[in-house]
Length: 205
Image (tube, rainbow, N blue to C red; front, side, top):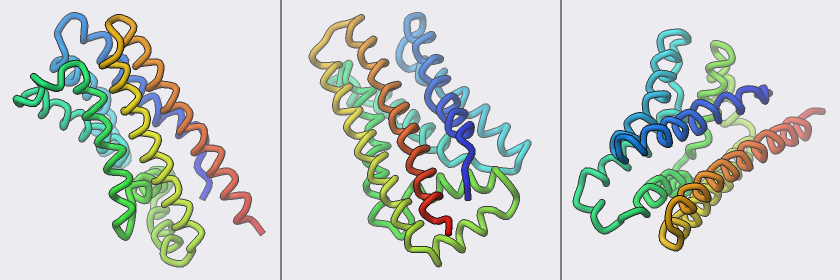
């Protein structure tokens, strides 16, 4: 059940780097709403390509897209007036909260992300993954641990970005917020790669 490291890099580029780049490029010229819409374009394009080319639904892209959609809903509502500059980090933190809340479900969010990756690698691997989830308690524990780490990481990152938005002024606030976002997502991705390798090594006879 090995996941090539390149897939984590691709997931980071599609779901973090490209949306963040589109957001920053568009923000200065068109404003926050248009910037959020622009950041969703790479995600939608990737999901359409994935469905047409591989008959596969990318769960991670769907989660990130849902976060952008929630941000747009807040911006277009009256809440945007009192949230001010803190609205983007505060709303994107909802994704981290969803990770943590999913621990109360039979199958947390990381289960669906891992299953999505399996199905892209080869047809039928998602069925194998479902069977191993049912029969291997160690796999279930590892999935829940990853859910905890990602949930806490995302919530912590967004609380820190919220403090930056409230405590600093532009352009420092935007610069530090962007650096923090890349550092946390990069750190979470690296940790996931190393943890997966350790888990696989431990499962080998």
